[in-house]
Structure formats: C-alpha cells, structure tokens
Image (cartoon, rainbow, N blue to C red; front, side, top):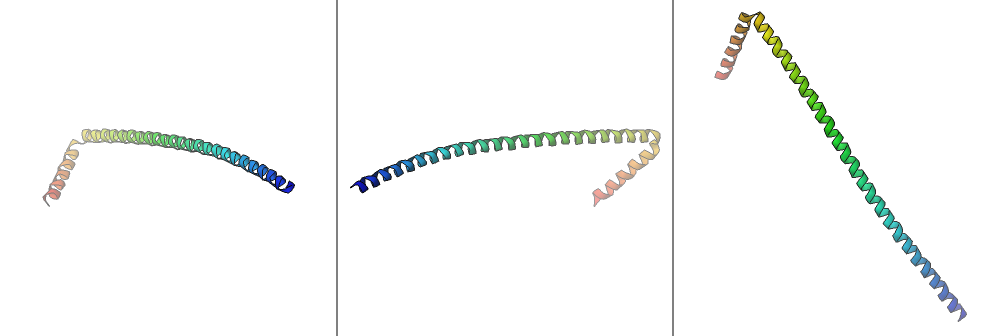
Amino acid sequence: MATAAGKTATDARANADLEADIRQLKADIDKLTKQLAKTGEHGYGTARRAATEGVEQLRAQGEAAFDSLRSNAKDIEAQMMASVREKPVTSLAIAAGVGFLFALIARR
C-alpha cells in the first residue's frame, strides 16, 4: 500500500509539473504571437514608408525631366525664331516644301 501511495504522489507531482509546463508553453506562445504581430506591423510600416519615398523620388524625377523638356523646347523655339528673322525667304521656302510633302503624303 505504501508503494501505491508513493506512486500516486509521484503521479500527482508529475501531473502538476506537466500542467505547469503547459501553462508556461501557453504563455510563451502568447508572447511569440504578440512579437510576430509587432514584427508584421513594423514590416508593413517599413514597406509603406519605402513605397512612399519611392513615389516621391519618381515624382521629383518626372518633374525634373518635364522642366528639362520645357527648357529645351523653349531653346529650340528661340533658335527657330532667330533663324526665321535672319533668313525669312529660306524659312518660307522650307515651310512651303514641308507643306508640299504633307500634301503628297495625305493624298495617298
């Protein structure tokens, strides 16, 4: 009988240890879940900031390219105006030739 009582006490201690281990595992799983949630939020925030910065860079590059094109167009316009003022007859002949070519192309 002493052996059965000793075995029951050992089983009770083992069950108590097992229940304590299970509670500890549940607590660890809760901590890991919270840490993963924080990591996911951090990753999302980082990705969003990177995307926003990328969009801003592309917008700035687009504006710079547009300004450059506008400047080049103004320079070409100024050169054409100067050329027309210097040689009006040549400019008129070129315009007539271009018009004639467009007329030929449009007829086909």
